[in-house]
Length: 247
Ligand code: UDP
Ligand code: MN
Image (cartoon, rainbow, N blue to C red; front, side, top):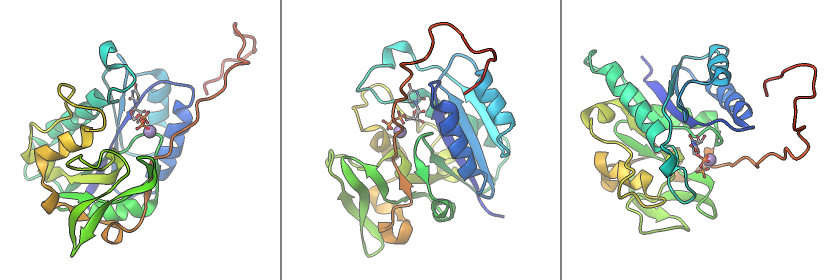
């Protein structure tokens, strides 16, 4: 059977949330055997996301965990608790059914752009696979540098000293590796800005072990796009429309 792809998506309430989730679901719906783990950054499941998930037309697990207020500051990593909640769910779900069904996990932020080819590439991940990411790190792209089929360095414009100079969108991990490293999580304590990926990957793999995808990391199949903040300057102070519309 095809390995299941588990996509962990942290998401939070804001004017563009439903638009982002709609675009993401439109992509994911075209991918075979994809299980979406949508984790709301909230104290409870919101009605908007609950309704959205019900109509999304793909297998979806809807979780929630709020980011503690002290961590909601510029410069601090985002969505640590949400990604960990997704990891915990995945481990919990598989702890009682050994041997685990083949699976691949990746972290899919709600605002990035994913080509369908990316999923074909990550599906064959044996342990940890990597590939280039477009529009990130102050460059057109970042990528793992590959020689003779092995990752030997990183093409990056930002903090080249990172052990794994890669964005969250640039790697996938097999379910087996997630289950055999039950303590591997994203850390708040001691984690510097931009080190989330490295801190996590250090716990489960080595650079030598990485599997290059996307034609030896020479193709961009995912883009770290960011959505412009919407202008709501003309929103009425009070509710003036005759109907209530979810946007
Ligand atoms: N996110 C979240 N809570 C927040 C901020 C962001 O759950 O307070 C989610 C967001 O929806 C996205 C991921 O975390 O899926 C990364 O956030 P963002 O895209 O803002 O980060 P950047 O593009 O700067 O890497
Ligand atoms: Mn983003």
